[in-house]
Amino acid sequence: MVFFIFLVLNSFSATASQLLIPMDEDSQKNHLKAYGVTYFALEEKLEVRWLLNYRGGSFLISDTDLLRKECKIRGVSFEVISDAKTQSILEDISSPSQNQEVVLLEKAPKIAVYSPQGNKPWDDAVTMALTYAEIPYETIYDEAVLNDALVLFDWLHLHHEDFTGQYGKFYRTFRTTPWYIQEKEEAEALAKKLGYNKVSEEKLDVALKIRNYVVGGGFMFAMCSATDSFDIALAAEGVDIAETMFDGDPSEPGYQSKIDFSNTFAFTDFTLERSPMVYEFSSIDMTAKRNIPKESDYFTLMDFSAKWDVVPTMLTQNHTRLVKGFMGQTTAYNPKNIKPNVLVMGESKLNGEARYIHGIKGKGFFTFYGGHDPEDYQHRVGDPKTELDLHPTSPGYRLILNNVLFPAAKKKPQKT
Image (cartoon, rainbow, N blue to C red; front, side, top):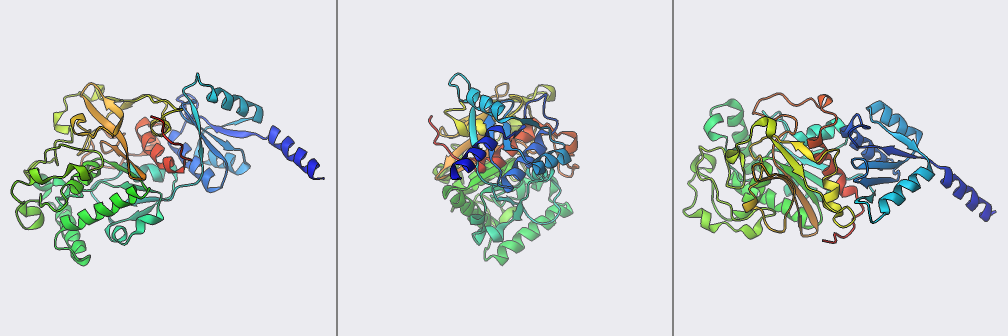
């Protein structure tokens, strides 16, 4: 009887179908929502495999009526393939001659977005991507971080933020606007409530908690000014770099020489921008050094060995290697200020800048992505948010969602 059941199960397995979600340019009509469907499949405990470099980084999922229905509802293209076809695809991918790999996705990661409450005069590409893809997330902020709430999450995104306590260096242009005044008052009130004399001191402790989260095994993703301001705050621990209009007293003399670059995640040997009238944090950012016309502003995703460098291969999955550039307060990174152990995954050779970088810190991982909104070239404070219904195949937004699924992957040791 047991033998009979075994044969029946084997027979079912041999004829079972799989659902392939193609991610190449021609076959998929909504790349962004495809990530949401994949996340949904993980929530449903279905077997999910990420086929790296196969048709744009396609997903292979156990076929169910519920999953087909979800794809149709969300407008995601899919193909039902037989078990025999599945085996053929997997065998081809496993060939040493193919720069492809199969990665098993094990669980739906629990996602946190570090962001203040209330309506700010700017939006955030990651929260827009998560919402559009229908991937659930929780919003947390300083009080929760300081109370160790990060241990509840697998993945953390840092919203548009200034961890140095200088209010985004918006002073020159926006210091008399109601939103700037209100934001400063709210930040000072929160710092006081939490027992700090200065916003910069409170933000430093938040940055240290985030650092410990990553070192302990967390996954952290940041864009725009949250990337360099985070590292600057860590490097300036114990050093007052804020001027009087930000924290009530002058910065300390010779603060540049007191910066400790060993504390940072990604950046080194940078020079801080001292003037509060300059909309810039340091020499890390390339925004003011750029001389590229919009129509020529693209960056290239690097090619990695899928079988040897699985992590950067996952993070660069796309249906094109050429991605439209876009600007932000922190647009791109000066290669001279990037630590040698940090991996550049996307670069603009035309301007000699890094756009998309990744590294390991302790047991965890971090990814920094320059720019504000991949589908809004020069997003300004107060501009309307991007409607992703108009950009369902955006290569720039795909990079964000690669990072969202990254913690779900069963990790293999990187070989190079």
